[in-house]
Amino acid sequence: MGNAHRRHGHRMHQSSTVHPPHKYVPQPPLPPNSNMLSLPYAHADTYLRSLASQAEGFGRSAVGGLHGPLHRVTSLADDGPGSLRDACRRKEPLWIVFEVSGTIQLSSYLSVSSHKTIDGRGQRIKLSGKGLRLKECQHVIICNLEFEGGRGSDVDAIQIKPNSKHIWIDRCTLTDFDDGLIDITRESTDITISRCHFFQHDKTMLIGADPSHVGDRCVRVTIHHCFFNGTRQRHPRVRFAKVHMYNNYIRNWGIYAVCASVESQIFSQHNIYEAGQKKVAFKYLTEKAADKEVETTGHIRSEGDLFLNGAEAGLMAENVACNMFHPSEHYPSWTVEAPTEDLKHILHHFTGWQSIARPADQTLCSE
Image 1 (spheres, rainbow, N blue to C red):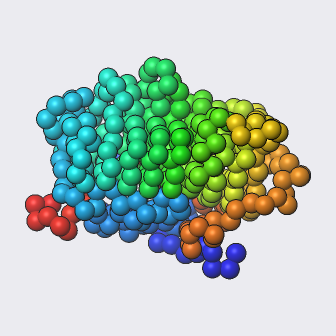
Image 2: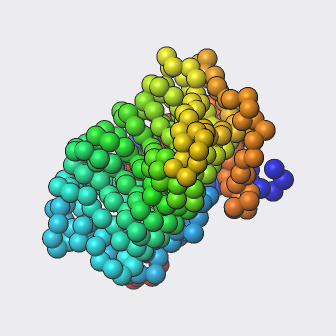
Image 3: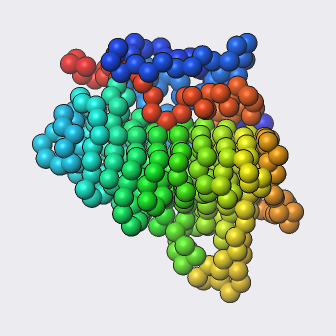
């Protein structure tokens, strides 16, 4: 690997900022005597906009609303003045923050336009009923939100399609939608999903629409430091795309952990796979791309992964020597650590929505 990734980071602690008393959620103590308590981009909460461009992996270029004004959501209404929907439909760059906490009950998909940061730090915002739709947009950051209880056919918590790029989904909690939690399809690419918590769900994450959408060969996604907690399948399921997974904790899957299908390339690096009743982590499905004559499956490379509680990789022997992409071909560094008990503890307790104060915005005196 050489210098392809770095093994240093900022030491993780409960918080370097002051929590508002009414929002404080006590965090469990970190493991004693640990020398591996680092998570990436630990200084991203120093100032509000320092979050921009801190993503690792394929979504590293996402700047969100960095170059726009601060926009305050003051209403939990589905639409109208002060609502999140009103902010997200605006065409100009915006860094969106919340002055309220609570549930926003969406009656329809909430479409997010380009150059938006939806920043939930400092409040507790839950989106329910429907989810977010990122359609033909770019440079979007979604941080520190909860998604729960999406209802209806084809209702995903976050649906990214078509032709969206430079997207970063960070520290979100996602559960209980009628379809997927995150779907990335129809030539949407250069996306990072980090430090998210997924639980109580079936079809968790789909990357690549179906065998007829061969344009999804361009899709590139990084998934790191996420906690898949008892979700049934699709962590993720992949068609065509290149996916780099590292330092994730996937526990007690119901069917499989990760599924490779037609022409996909999945590089699984230093993840923790902890089995429940189902023991085989990796699954392969064979499908025929619309422009090919022969059915094919995908490829999985496992490097330094930890398999616990009787978990078995289930790698296909013929895939071991296949022509697999390497992340260093696409980005120079990423923060990866050994898959240890300490890492399990951190991913268990420090993924998903976090009770942290909203950082100050250096660009505005009012913040």
